[in-house]
Length: 78
Image (cartoon, helix red, strand yellow):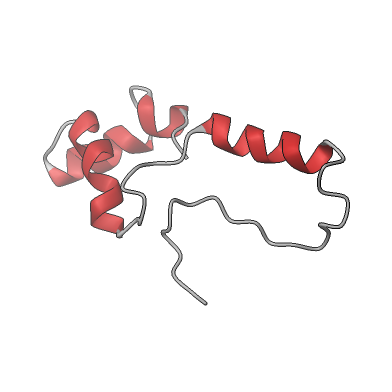
């Protein structure tokens, strides 16, 4: 998920970018393809918030005990 850990100076994004010899922006732009994410982009915090709101809204009363993954298609399984 695109958070400060990845986007702020001195974070994990900077560390990995330095190791790869690219800028933080280049790392973030290329990460979805490198990891094989089906959507081709990193998950945004608002997407996770939208799921939380939906689950808490009463519009999903029979959803329980579920493992809902928001990873842009990173995890591949049936």
